[in-house]
Length: 27
Image (cartoon, rainbow, N blue to C red):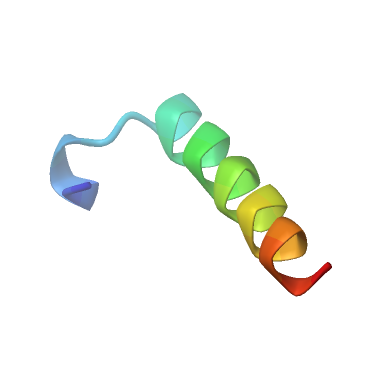
């Protein structure tokens, strides 16, 4: 994802998604 083209809302959604993915990988 290119930050320049990322809308704030999309950026937040991706941030949350990545957080869950990291959690999933850790478990």
